[in-house]
Image 1 (cartoon, helix red, strand yellow):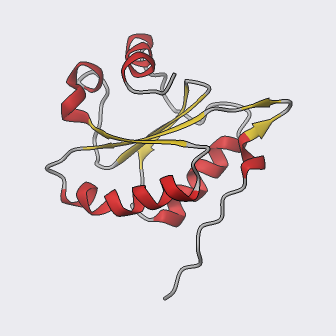
Image 2 (image 1 turned 180 degrees about the horizontal axis):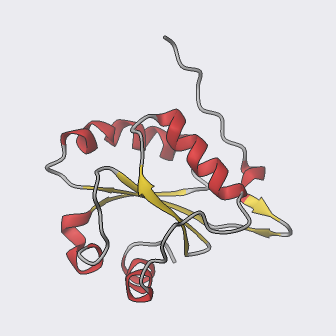
Length: 132
């Protein structure tokens, strides 16, 4: 089965007159074989849509942030809009799935997160990982 190329549209990154800063964090571990296999897909998505800030995060390199976050499955995805958590969860490791998730989240007027992320964790993410 041949999959069609992923098409991104910058208009999805706007809601009203203010552009949204979209940060997509792939939360992985170097020891995870599936995570290592996804690096190519991650690099492709980064090249296809540079207006989104894509960050590959080895959670073991940032234990001060992720020890308190319950990561049950690798890889997990954390999407932040304007530096606020909007989505957090495990993902199916396919480019089309990640694209659909990021597109849907970028269009959502409210967070798609089931439980709030601790404010301390959010501040650490903002100061240590997200672009300024």
